[in-house]
Amino acid sequence: MTKIFKWGLKTLTMAKISVIVCTKNEEKNIGKCLQCLIKQTIKPEIIIVDGHSKDKTRKIAERYADKILLDDKKGLGDARNVGWKNASAKIVAYCDTDVRPKSHWCERILKEFESDKKLVAVSGPLVPYDGEKSLKQHFKFWAGDFPLAVNPVFPNIWGANMAFKKFILRKFPFKEKFLEDYDIRNRLLEAGCKIKFSANVSAPASTRRFQTTLDFYETCWQNYIIYSVNKSLTGKSGTGYYSEE
Image 1 (cartoon, rainbow, N blue to C red):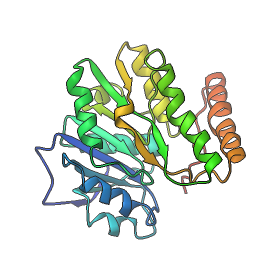
Image 2: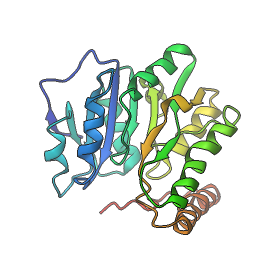
Image 3: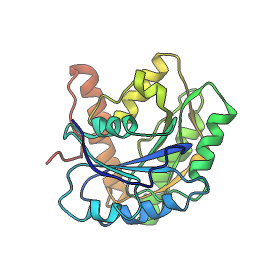
Image 4: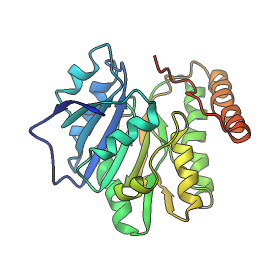
């Protein structure tokens, strides 16, 4: 059973959107992320799902979050499920701790759903705010320019910047510990659900997992392409570059 670490008195039961941040040992990043969330033009309910951090992550989160939950130690996909199951709003969004959402991020997500009632999921480009020039250019292309070019024929979902109608997550909960965003995207499309990858909901993101442009491609090859092929052939899932320690 999920342990509730904090259930704040300021919980927004009437919030139009709940934003969930799944985190673990992110004391260096979580404060800046949450500062961006509290400055949104449409105030979200902020939910932290913490992976039993050993640093000051939860202490920092207490300054900003409406709810702080401890995950069930079953991986990222399950942590995302813990988040939406405890969300008050009908629209549930996710961002990573190293994402810095602009003040209109929540507002634009809501507008996407309002403009098309058939939409069940929305995602958008990740735009790098750090890293060396070449790395930023390649990251921007693959995380933003390319997905936009192939949308709507091949709509994409980025876990660091995605939103859903909560009812659809009841039908299609997250299942994977790694590439859970890719997996839920595939299942939604197979079921005939409508997804949109929109330039209107872009989000600044860090390139911190990659040291150089070469490292970017090596990491993507090993942890995304080979992982995906192996899973499709063997059915075995893993954690990619995420640690479960």
